[in-house]
Image (cartoon, rainbow over all chains, first blue to last red):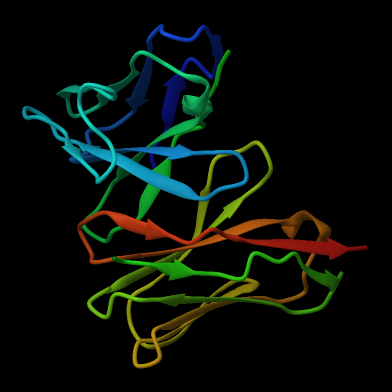
Length: 114
Length: 110
C-alpha cells in the first residue's frame, strides 16, 4: 500500500468561508478520489480527481461547491466553498494503486462548520 | 441506482466465536468486492478483496462471494475484542469507483 497524508487533520470554520484540504501520496497513482463521511453514515463519493483534466463529479456534487485540483500524480486538493453547518463531515481522499479496484484511504480531515 | 446493503447491527459476539457479516449488492455487473474495517474516529482500512465466486481466506478472515445471489460475506474466526469496529462492504467494476454500504458494527465481548 501507499503512505497517504492529509492536511489539515481537523478544522473548525465559520459559515460562508472556504477550506482547502490537501492529499499527498508517496508514490505516483493514476486514480485519486474524494469522499465525504457524515456522522454515523457511510462513505459518499464526491468526485474522481483526474490528473491534467477536470474532476469527475458524482450526482449531487458540483464544481462550484467542491473545486478539485490534481496538478500531478501524487497530489490533490479539495476545496469546500461557502461552507454551511451541513458541510460538517469527515473528508477522505483515497487512491487506487493497481488496476484491481482496491482503494486505500488517507487519515481524513474532520471539518466542523459553525 | 447502485446499492450495497448491510445490516447496521450491532452484531455482538463473544471472544473466540465466529463473526459473520453479510452484504448484498444491486448492480449485477459488479466485478470486485471489498471489505473495509473502520475503527471509531479512524479512516477505513482494506482487509479483504474478492473477485470470483467462492471463498478467499487470509488469516482469520474469510470472504465469500456468490454472484448469482449478489451476496458477499465476511467471516472472522476466533474473534477478538480488537476486531470491534464497523465493517464496510464495497462493490465496484474493476478499475472504477466503488459503492459502499452503510456498514455493520461488530462488538466482540471479552
